[in-house]
Image (cartoon, rainbow, N blue to C red; front, side):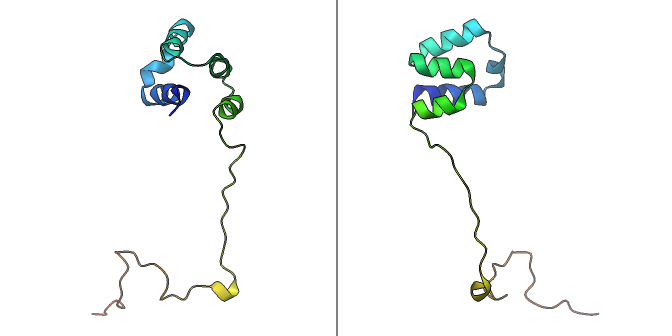
Length: 92
């Protein structure tokens, strides 16, 4: 994991660090030996630039695919929950 990601993870896990002064943040970045371009991107809050510098993906596109008519599941194929009753409710 890169030092930039470690820094972001540390900042995200510790809410008290979000109140760091600019000077303290600079010291923290220096202590973690971040590259100058990465520091510039972090200072500017430029996530796209930081992602590019770290070799991240350009864009992620989550997609869902619904089954077609011929692929429809029968009720027997559907996943069962633990609280689903297999039997019909009994009448008293």
